[in-house]
Length: 151
Image 1 (cartoon, rainbow, N blue to C red):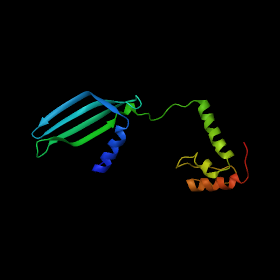
Image 2: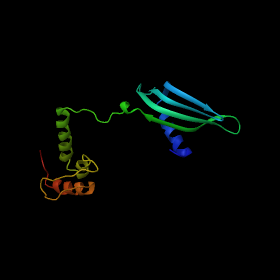
Image 3: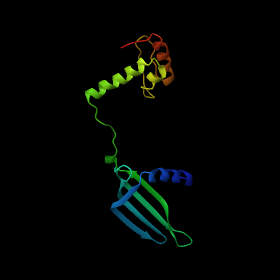
Image 4: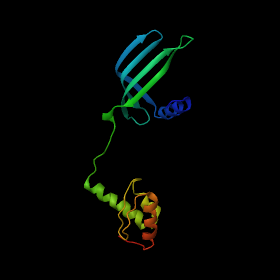
């Protein structure tokens, strides 16, 4: 976010979560007309109760009127606070098939194609042509659904 509108948009959305922050580890450096504060802070989101721990850095500068303002601010969630992948059990995997099968039962090719990732590759049942785009996957199910499959 490098302009006022995008920074404002970020904070408008962030403030809807009703954050309450505390610095858990901070380090300050002071210079002539500037000050730096960096470390780790933690926010508790009043709207959800969720906690978010993040690294932060603020660079404060004194403007021509002598007021201290933020010249640079960086914040990034701590890696251990980010869920990269969640474990899935066998029952949940099986249920993913049923979601696909339920979409197929609608005979709506768009609903079936929506179950695939943007970079999926489909090696279809009744075609020897691999499908590797959303359009090609939708096209395959457009024709396949005409056969009114049941499973």
